[in-house]
Length: 155
Image 1 (cartoon, rainbow, N blue to C red):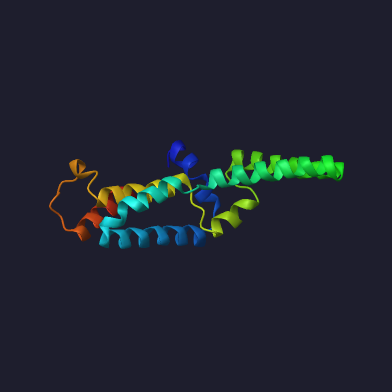
Image 2: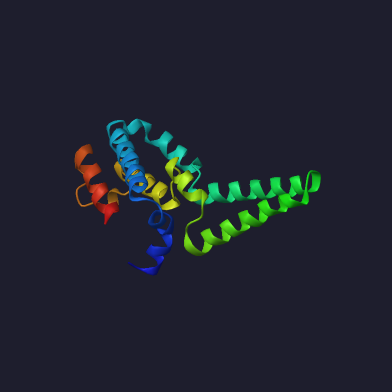
């Protein structure tokens, strides 16, 4: 596996196989549904553009807890400064290892990586014909287009 691919998959590599399978299954079910309802694909693509990935979720969570800790240390007790320190340590750990204590919780909630979101987005775009110039058989049935898209993006 290349270094770039390893770096892009750090979160998935640190997530349980069960969670990764569940997230992939949900994505595959979405693809199957939208391949049968292609008129809904533009709306789904818009939803995917707005979906928060795991990095954004962790960063927002960390900054919120940091601000709360600072505020509580000013208004209640200086010991609340431990909270921003702890959160900073978690964020550093995530940056270095791709894992931190909140990660399993968010992954179990179905929060996906940017790459997992992009996989669904690219599969949907392939189904609606955005990559037809890359396909050998542009006359394929919708079912075969789904199969072609799965093969292309799962390699």
